[in-house]
Picture 1: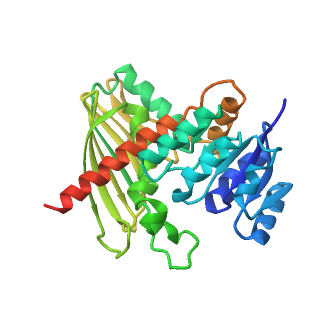
Picture 2: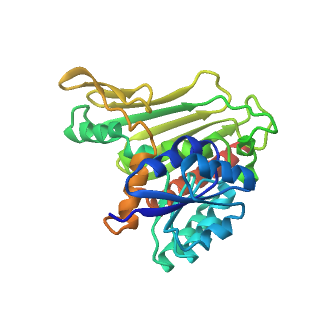
Length: 328
């Protein structure tokens, strides 16, 4: 079977821990080249993960005819320009989340990939968690009745020094926003995956603890088209970590205390039970496997550019609503 030949742009934390290992280990993939601004670090990264080439200039990677697809793992403000350039070079694109700085950039990315007949995916890897498929099947069975309220809490203490490699996440011009933009987007995709379209949004953002360009804490309220209400709370300022998902229905509930673990408590018509549906050891592996199928013509990406755009639309409305609240 012919392997999909990859170029990786950006060699930061996620690329090192998950993306590059998945590209190296999957039988359907070959990591051909990497790009990083510092040539010596690019070379070191390439050798660590078995890539034959490295570039300090990402535009050179796009000109490499050996490469079929690129994984873009750079700061958010670069996603659109790099995706468009990759598409124009005939490369399929799997882009880190959030997809772009705004909906307009998402539209440009989608249009460029369509015009050049390449696939576009966005790295919302939680879409592939087995626990989410199980939750959807429980809801569909009627065991907890009609979903009424869903709550997600996502807290991650983050107060980097100025020279920290991830300090760019506190700059709005580079990251687009704070925790609501950075990892709140993951949870919005989870909401959309389970409950479908959101037709109403209210929100608050705040700098409760840190004086920085982006919020350190935010809460969004959602009304889903099918009727349920949702609450998403995120923070960089809460010391105690949270990654919870709780769904309350007219006849019971589904509670996941740590989404990344996949352990579920269900209370419903059939009583109380506990289940376990853990994710893949490398959280990015199912995402990349699905995108390989898309790039080789087997299916469309499960997390397409349109999914990324839908999340971006909600994000824009959250920040618009928060700005209105600040004026009261």
